[in-house]
Image 1 (tube, protein in one colour):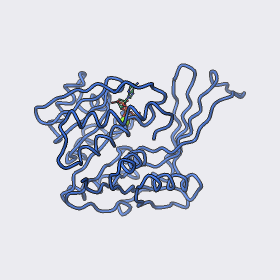
Image 2 (spheres, helix red, strand yellow):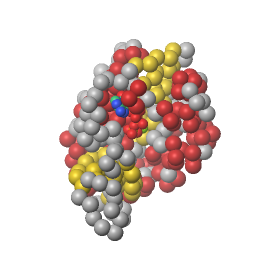
Image 3 (spheres, helix red, strand yellow):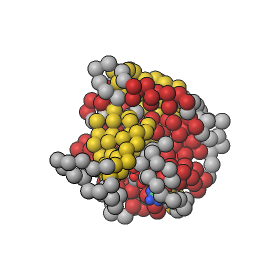
Image 4 (tube, protein in one colour):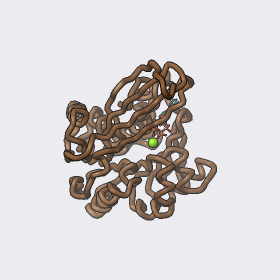
Length: 292
Ligand SMILES: Nc1ncnc2c1ncn2[C@@H]1O[C@H](COP(=O)(O)OP(=O)(O)OP(=O)(O)O)[C@@H](O)[C@H]1O
Ligand SMILES: [Mg+2]
């Protein structure tokens, strides 16, 4: 049995262009271009839905075909929708240019995602869970909605989880301010760079321990090196599952969903099993193109 989960965050279309050579400014270049569902919040919600977790996605889309397609994908995964359509905005789109050698350049238009308001997020009750994708906090416009969702969930007795999402905008937010604003989060899910930035620790295990001094539980992803679990005095490392890596887009979101689905199971599995559940879903995600 798992409690209901509300996931708050971005829904977006990922446009991935794999170039056949260096970009050719002023000219053109053949490329393999694929369009897929993305957005960190929607990625986590779709994975949770497919795993059979009762989940509601809260977010915003534009009144366009891209938004309808994303809603169709969420619904097909078994996700309930608390989505507001913003007629004046476009559904979020992320263009990813992949050059020969794998170098990636991302162009992000978060569009309607920036219109999220506190009243867009359904309430959570005691025993339920709220997962917030950290991008919602990293822009001043939807920030109030993200912080209000965390505060309301905590006040209601729900557990909460948060992925810090991205080091650049996090620096812009101010690390100390971010740490203060998110101090009540139950489970923090940074990657290694985010864990280092949030703590000032060069060593990622030191960073995990420092964050576990602030939150009941911390899971730090280490890319190809797997992940760390830290709670109280316990620090545990598990290696990544071997995978033929095709596309790491959304690997962190898959890890989050796999770990969350296990963490929310009653009785709660042992820490090694929690990490392995996240790593298993991440291994599946990196072995296929697209985020989910
Ligand atoms: N190159 C890789 N080889 C094998 N597994 C990987 C690789 N990259 C990522 N993974 C898997 O995905 C998990 C999450 O990856 P990572 O630490 O890169 O998260 P992230 O930086 O949050 O990713 P993103 O935000 O881009 O989705 C890792 O713990 C690992 O299981
Ligand atoms: Mg991440």
